[in-house]
Length: 267
Image 1 (cartoon, one colour):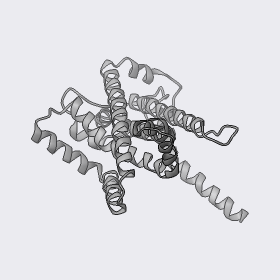
Image 2: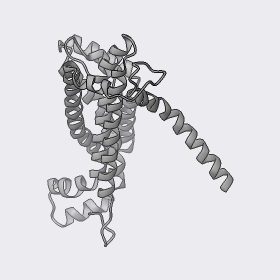
Image 3: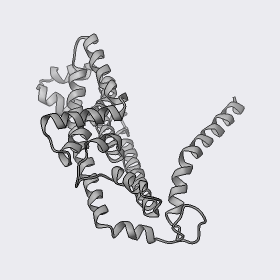
């Protein structure tokens, strides 16, 4: 068993090296004064200064953050409502059908989703830009939130709701004082997942963005096509570090929410 455990650990190390080596390679050369992705000549922060002095890029960063926060917040609200609606469906077949339809949206290729939104916005006359990107990000984030919240609802004992009703709680009190506090970790998980998906999305955004409006993923792609520039490395490094901060923040929030008190009951 010990030998199998060591082999498994070695396998995991190799997998993580393969996954993270390109990222660390990109980060390492973001400090290269030589201006190329080879022959490291010396340490410099020139490329990071170039990023922060690029006014257009800073506006695009602001656009991306605003889109991500708005889409994550709105999709979390809609996703929680959708998860509650699915959970309280009494017929098992109908519930399974709704969950299947939700999961299909998650596994559908981004190219198909992006092209569908492009056709839809063109038909109904929505101008491609901020609104089209926001609507599309909300649409593909809602199923993710539902997927994060549903397991927490399934963990909740039905007797908990019955006890609240027996004590005279109204439907609104049951929802706000029993259900929502119980599924808070799932809500936070859905919000952060929606936020990271919005920040990272390229395929869908590429279809629905218009002239004069762009996000970081589309901008990085456009600049990379023009040739190697270590400012792209610097920008990508900053995005990666920001994502790490989000993940760490979610970890501590989730850990605090799941911490039991002295009586063994959730706080």
